[in-house]
Amino acid sequence: MSFSSNANVLFLCIVVSSALFYYLGLSLFSSTIAKVSHSHLKNEIPNHNISFNKNEIKSTHRSETISEIAVAVVACGDRLDETLTMLKSALIFTEWWQPLRFIIFSDENLTSSFKEKLTEWKSLTNNSLEFELHPITFPQKGKAEEWRKLFKPCASQRLFLPGILSKTDSILYVDTDTLFLSPLKNIWNHFSAMNTSQMAALAFEHEDPNTGWYNRFAHHPFYGPYGVNSGVMLMNLTRMREFHWEDYVIPVYKEFKLKITWGDQDIINIIFHYYPHKLYIYPCRFNYRSDHCMYMSVCSSAEKEGVAVLHGSRGTFHSEKQPAFRAVYRAFEEYQLGTDLIQHLLKPIKAYLEETVHTHCGQIHSIFTKAMDKYLPQITS
Ligand SMILES: *[C@@H]1O[C@H](CO)[C@@H](O)[C@H](O)[C@H]1NC(C)=O
Ligand SMILES: *[C@@H]1O[C@H](CO)[C@@H](O)[C@H](O)[C@H]1NC(C)=O
Ligand SMILES: *[C@@H]1O[C@H](CO)[C@@H](O)[C@H](O)[C@H]1NC(C)=O
Ligand SMILES: *[C@@H]1O[C@H](CO)[C@@H](O)[C@H](O)[C@H]1NC(C)=O
Ligand SMILES: *[C@@H]1O[C@H](CO)[C@@H](O)[C@H](O)[C@H]1NC(C)=O
Image 1 (cartoon, rainbow, N blue to C red):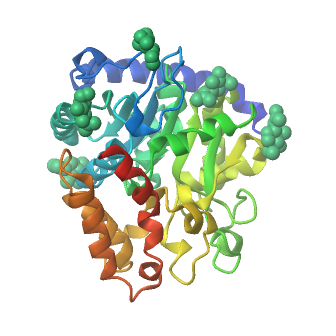
Image 2 (spheres, protein in one colour):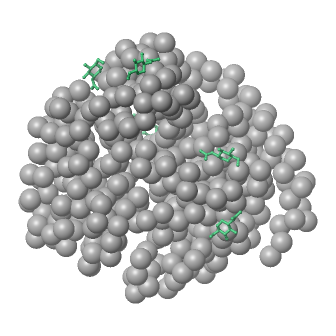
């Protein structure tokens, strides 16, 4: 398969139109772009000598500033509360001295709620938090509606982030239905493990050929033996721009649109099928879904070190289908930022999980709190 014939022309169109759209978007919505500067922080980030005993910081001679962690999410429709719960978990699992940026793309009617809540949280925590609120934008005017409908509302936005976030080097993209259960730096550090060809990191869709969806049902190419799940994705946007990622998205979509089921995730699978050396695979504990425990426990990294990122795909945070997933989500949703993490987060999670031991995922409930058991006592002395 070759995209090169019309790729150059397409690339020009995309560059010109996305630049135009971004410019228009910025000027139309500039009032919605909220930036909170470092100078408002209670604690400036020290440039030298980081020695914060509570957090096991070993290096006391670090001379550069700590690099920022950027979490990006696309939130539309009724996903406001779910997104805020995910962002709350990200704040909990980031030490106060670690620069953290939330990059939020949302429907316009959600912007003011995000701004209000994040401003409140910023004043409650010592995190060096910045946030950006962006409207949903698409690169080609005529195609905007088609993209919007491709998957659940506005999920395909993520395919265009390398161009839209043209000044950003790297992001951790997460679906709204995810929760951090361990420090963000553990997943962010995978950037350092990537070699220079790898521009993104993902986990497999399945660990087991008998339950794999792609290997049994897909009518299009996909990555590796079982495909990848796109819900938790490290994206080196610099490298994706160098690769001209967006030149591949539209031709792939046009060629396979009648064969794809899971929208943007399928497009990502198809591209990495042809460019496997550009993808880094991290263990399943960084994108833990009910598939990993609903029949039997198949994610050994989560058994060993605990779930790092929980992904409530197929609505498991809100339905009765997987009580253990709902239990964890409920505790995070109820937790008020700034209150005691052991009393008001860890204990409720364990109590709610106790009620789910009749399910397969509930039987191995300690995997959900294993990483927290280790981390939370360190930051709440
Ligand atoms: C670095 O730490 C040492 C002792 O740990 C202290 O004497 C020194 O003043 C610190 N330097 C800075 C720039 O904070
Ligand atoms: C925002 O608009 C979307 C439709 O565009 C709707 O589904 C959603 O319920 C609205 N959210 C709020 C908070 O009004
Ligand atoms: C915020 O910083 C202050 C002073 O450095 C410290 O006493 C407090 O425990 C910190 N709070 C959190 C939530 O880290
Ligand atoms: C992303 O890739 C660029 C170009 O190779 C590199 O300079 C940068 O350090 C990478 N970013 C991260 C977070 O690894
Ligand atoms: C990076 O790793 C992939 C997968 O192991 C490999 O195919 C590729 O050649 C490596 N690239 C470099 C520059 O080492």
